[in-house]
Image (tube, rainbow, N blue to C red; front, side, top):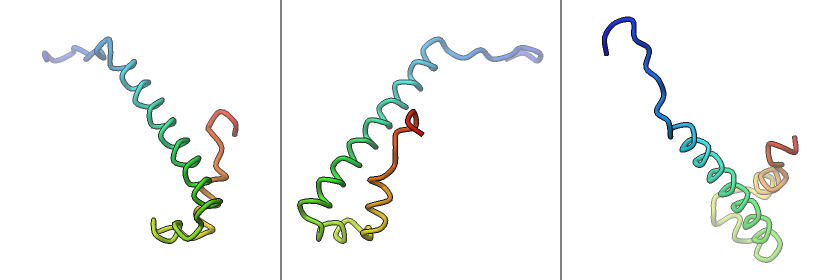
Length: 68
């Protein structure tokens, strides 16, 4: 690129980033829901995934960013 020119973002890059963020948020919400189910039905599995009971409870208690 010649000196003095500013790179402009590609048209779809913002939309791609937004889609990736939404996918990450949904995956985190799904993980927390599964963790909550596991803690209720099979609490012994919490140890198997490498979390303490306190860590699992802290993760389950996290709110989506729009509810903070």
